[in-house]
Structures are given as structure tokens and as C-alpha cells.
Length: 237
Image (cartoon, rainbow, N blue to C red; front, side, top):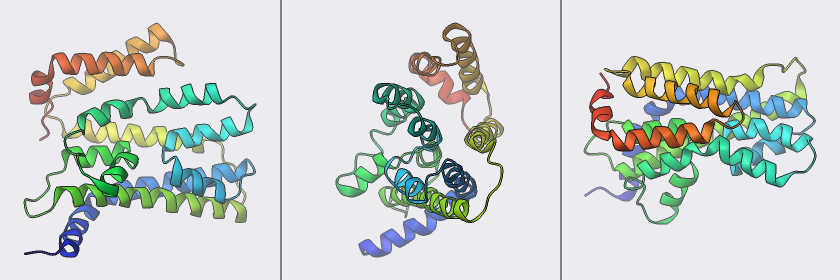
């Protein structure tokens, strides 16, 4: 009979290799974020605490501009809601998996990110590995990568000076890479093409400032109504 410590260690060993690609992306992006904040006059404590408490890369980049602008909490609220609305749909799909009591379950909810969601949803977890501990370690490892990089970036920004133009595009670049990786794994590209088509249509109809939430609602409705065909078509190789 395994002890809790032994179970946790086995889960950590299984989870860590899954997060190595995320570590490479997160450390670079979070360092860029820390340097970016420092360029606007914020010392390393700002990116450190914002990463620890907000833990939402795109919002954190956007928050730099919000902090520099006139105080407008209502605009900040709706902007954050639009950017992170996708987590509503992530959460719905993880309701059964994340039905874990205590602080571990609470941290799984708080620490969900695009990459963590992807791993915890699709990872082929060995039968002798506790799923709850596996998902917890995936989550906390990714969280640690992001917070650590933000601190390093904030400290580096105070020691060196260089042109930070374009750093905010790093998050967009990472999403493109994730999409391309998923594209290469799919047998059929129907779900990916659905996302692209709906997003492009909503972009034309609602404009660049308002298309995200309508796109997600339409995609969710289509995937819900046509769940079985998309699940079969979207199976990975």
C-alpha cells in the first residue's frame, strides 16, 4: 500500500516531462513580461505579485497599459472578461475531472491556463498514477515556471536596458505555436477549421474589439450540437 508521499512523488515524476515544453515557452514569455513591466517603471515586485495573484499572461500584458491609463475599473473588468471568457468553457469541460475537495481542488481551478488545460484534458495518465495528484503537479509546475520567469524578468529589467518593442507579441506567438502543434496531431482538422471560420466571421461582423465572446458562444453551441462527429474527427494520431 503506497503512502500519500509515494503517490505524490510518482505523480510528480509523470507530470514533469509533460510540462517541459510549457516551461520553455512560459519562462521566455514571463521574463519578457517582467522586462516589459520594468520598461514602464514598475519594479520586480509588480510582475511578481501580479503573476502570483492574476496568473493570466495576456491580461497581465494588457494590465500594463491599464495601470498607465486613467483609472477605469469598469473598462478593466469587461476587458478582462472578454480576454479570459474562454475559461468559462474550459471550466465546463473539466467539471468532472476537477471534482476534488480541499486546497488541491481549489488550486486546480485557480491555476488553469490554456496549456495546463490542454495537458490535463488530453494526457494519457498511466493507471498506476493518481489522476488528482498528476493534474495538481502539472498545474503547480506551470504556475511556478510563470511566476519564476516574471521575477527574473523584473530583476533583469532593472539591470539591463534594451528596446522592448514587440515583446507583447510573444503571447500571440505562443498561441500560434500551440494551434499548429494541435493541427499536426489531428487526424481531421474539422474542429480547427470550425474555430478559424467562426472567429473570422465574427471578426467581420463584430469588429476586432468585440468578436471574442460571440466567437466562443457560437463555437460552443456548434460543438455541443455536433459533439459526436467532432469528437470522432478530432481524435489525435
